[in-house]
Image (cartoon, rainbow, N blue to C red; front, side):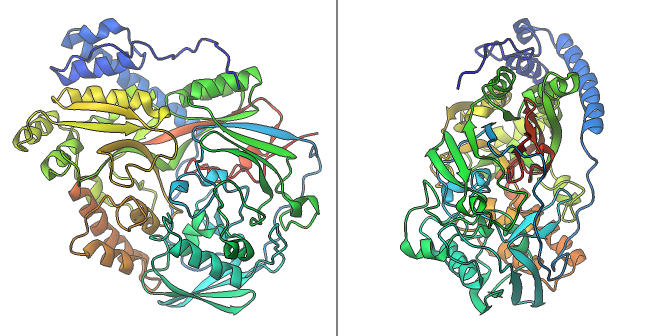
Length: 587
């Protein structure tokens, strides 16, 4: 795919300029210059000019916030829901629209590329968007962040050690195997025991799975459980044919007939492109959800920068694209003036953060890690590195979520002098570390390099390919990365990033107190008020180890050239990992 060379109004310039590191105000001007928001001369401006730039940035921030209020829905309170919101009932799926082009095709540009199509593989974490078309899940999550039935028709917790799920009886995998409780048992056991599984820690509270009858499965729980309906909406709930599981064939490159989703794989180039075609069940008219799988062919392609994606849609090389980072604001303007079609939104369950491996120097020094919590002015970072298209935060969960912790949220605030003193008193001479980042975060990583350079820290940047697992395996010092929730229950988030052998394992839970509190918080008999108090303790302990610097919650836009229908039904935009099952092309 060739992107056009059209000039972009916010094209990055001056990336090679040298940062002045004597005052934080000058560093901010250098940061803005790096990102093309002021001329390179600003890097050597007097502090008075830095103050002027700061005031100007504040005005722009105010303007951006006003725009966001017009284009994004106000966050609704998210409460803790235990049992199925609809009881035990069969969901019929959506009807087929009348104006579908049966020969419609769609090409999508995305900010990442999957290295595997196996839902349980460790490298699949964060790449569910590529597997949603292939595998139906037990549950799904709606735009109001409520867990809803999918292959499961309902669930309940009869006691603290048991969860029961009723299941659809009209679902068939592409290889002809029927979906039932035995299939659920086979999938959970595979995800818990597969070597290198990325799902084992999420499912660690399940001690065994019992087939009660074909349409009823019982999960016996050793700990927690309230998180299961939520995490079953993503990778952990994707169902694979038990026949294919028994064959032990690799699912890295495709389903081998093991999916029950509306599409199957036509071709796959790891970390680059997946091309889908309609599954056999859709073609035979037997797929349970008539409103899904309506494209004859669909491709998702990794395109490194949002600018390339915007230009590719405008030139017709792509039909649709995700726009992130600094260009989300530009895409929003293009949507408003009619240059492209689409929508822009704030993403409440995806943020960006610095993450540290505390087993590697200098992050084996807790005082140095803590200094990093004070070192970055997040408001100025969000304005400079994201042009206002990122909402500064101190913890991952926003105030709208029931588990939000005021205590953890208030622990750290930007304090340049305090950060400088803590770095000095840490005893580390000439601190240096390598910061890994994906291609799309190059400007932000460079900005962090400049900001920390103000403190005399030598940050060496290393761009890593899509699907790189070195940080997960403890082989990198730190990364600048997107973080997102596994479902809407906080237990999945804590397990994925902080504790658990199949997660990132950032936190050292030496005394087991966080693991114990997490089990109690996710006990189905624990009230929301009690769980909230437990999470307050958990988040405070996580923050005290200072292994992650939360920076801001991102914005993004989805743009297209006009033929895409149902783009507003693009699922899971709340965490930036979309489900494309209902997209189609109009006649």
